[in-house]
Length: 308
Image (tube, rainbow, N blue to C red; front, side, top):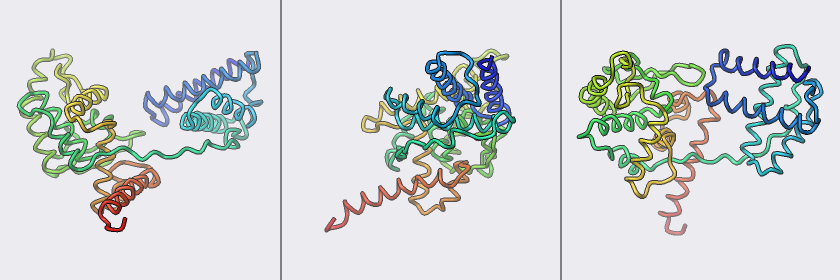
């Protein structure tokens, strides 16, 4: 049955993404969900289980896009699902199962790029200084917030940092980014001092409170039971401090990364240097921060110019 062949093709594709392209579990789940939904659409429309891959054309895909639109799916969602199909069919071409990519003939829904949420310098400093550094958790949380803002690294990159990745003398950290791509990022003296305070006062206590087999001696940032902290824990931690800063809203752990990039650009940093620090593969990804700075410039102009 062709249906089983299609199933096998999905499985091979996901294995390719996981092991050859090194994609994260979250990204893999998105691909799997998109492909399952497309397959469900094919089976519902055809009323049979043996839909040949070779018969999938641009009209088939356009019908699926139309059904998603009719069901209220956002443009960003439809664009992502179409991108998933394009990648899947490209994989089939590489494997010699198809000669052309039908998804490339379908126009991507036009999506307005949202400007990333970021903090002002004053709000960033206020948020970072919120944790009570007289407590063990406060010292750890202050070090995490300082480090995120000082380096612009992703939360997923932060939780993966080991002690051996940090050059304390030169204030450099080796980061393993998307697709296991390494980069070196500098950090400032404030982040170093917060990090050293946590490593000297808090981290040993967290390790001692954990049974020896479960201790993570390599990880820099630990939870109170001595294991490596998770991205979800960092998110919950940030939400707690946002609530304490009553007038700071609608930000995420990623907002500190956006703030890092925006503040560097506002201070005259070169866009390509920011690209390297953030670990972006394409300069176009970094260029969205020029729009953020342009908005700020217009806001300052409107507020300050006597005839604005």
